[in-house]
Length: 241
Image 1 (cartoon, helix red, strand yellow):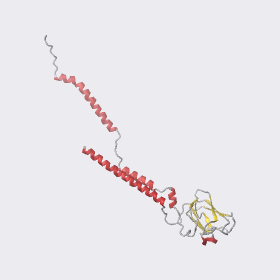
Image 2 (cartoon, rainbow, N blue to C red):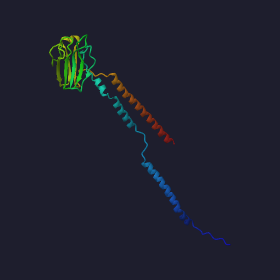
Image 3 (cartoon, rainbow, N blue to C red):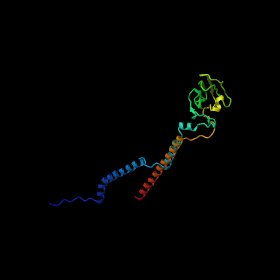
Image 4 (cartoon, rainbow, N blue to C red):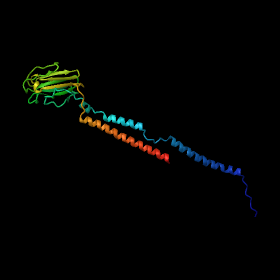
């Protein structure tokens, strides 16, 4: 039986016959590559935080940590009364009575080896606060006289007797009981944010607060250095591949 002759296909026809399939595969592969590149270009870059941004954060955090708290600022604002309270046995710092409309101070309280004290000896008040001195009736006859001569009460030993003043101007007013001043019966009023003079002191709590802020700076700078070192290592590793 004679063999059937196979139809001859020219090279050009074969190329045309295969081209659509190959072109489709190439187009599909090309589309996948382009999509991958597009995804990579639109994806957020996983870049490390810049050293400048990290340093700014460290400085800001240190500033916040080093700022004294309101309580610390109040302690640093303790007035310097000079030697006014040098011989006053019951003086133990300035009592904060700000925020109150009326403040009472005892006259003839225990102190200075008898009933020869004002209690509390030193008080801070807001401008416009009414200060009331009330006699205990102990220690003999007392009075209240401002050191600058701005006010003076009568001298009496009557228990329950009161003398009051409303202080509107900021400042420091020192006063004493004239009959017993030599025994240490003295007091002071601090009105508003006024200072009696002298530099502000930094107590232990303030020092710890500032020290903590500086310690935080050191920790953040160490993190900054470590991050920069790791960034250099990663960059070097990529270049060697």
